[in-house]
Image 1 (spheres, rainbow, N blue to C red):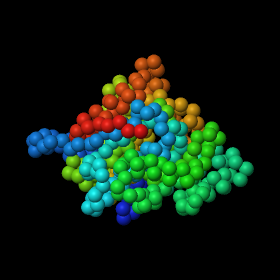
Image 2: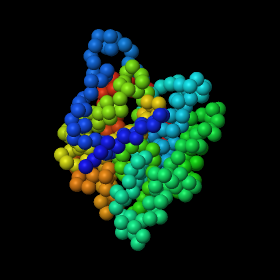
Image 3: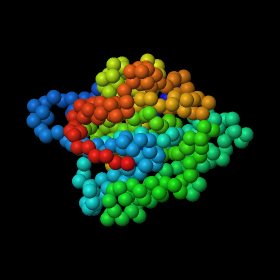
Length: 338
């Protein structure tokens, strides 16, 4: 049975694709008692909290490490800004990053290599691959994206220069490859193994949950992210639902969107992946057990809507609007990145 995928340290929290027991899930409201839904007069009179949208979709699919680098460059700057250190281009704003990635498999911070099912067919049971992917391995041959290079980054660099440096640094962490040639990394989000690739909308919110606009509660945040997906799908006449045991969003018993999050000092990273029109063959259970759930399948908007499936930009626009509604934030400030 799925158990709570929540790893907490003094400075970081992680929740991912596998969540909690039915009893624990039952105690979580479908829509949390969020400030965003309070409807009070004082809230309606206040100017909306702004979230800057950084959109990389016009560049087409980008390497996963690029999205990872953007998250960590912005997170580092935000944390140091909170500590009183000045950085160029850092105004303390919350962020929402939009990406489409090249094919990649990622394992969460505490996930097991057992859900890489192709390893079971290896002559040695995948012993060498398991060693390189081990959650304990932080050596030079670890198949892991690491963040310890951030401390050496100059505060005089622009955020794009810092992203370039972090992207280059990640090349020293060599990924493994699945039998289909897709690279595999262990990263710091919560949850089990999942796939990202072309045709999938990936959204990375960097929100400071200590702000009065939000709740300082990762379960509340998780429910809100799921609500963004549910409303986005509803705008295209797809009825979706939560699951009483597992995180993410489902159409019937099939998963259409994965959610895996992390936070540092209550600033969130990672986020959601919505299947618009991906190659579902990359979720093949002879390669991985998606999100560690053996008895469930994966679906997409294109599989459900066929020729009526909207394009990536149309889905992204709807998702940003729904994000603004659910979190009660202003999402009008947008810029293009790559």
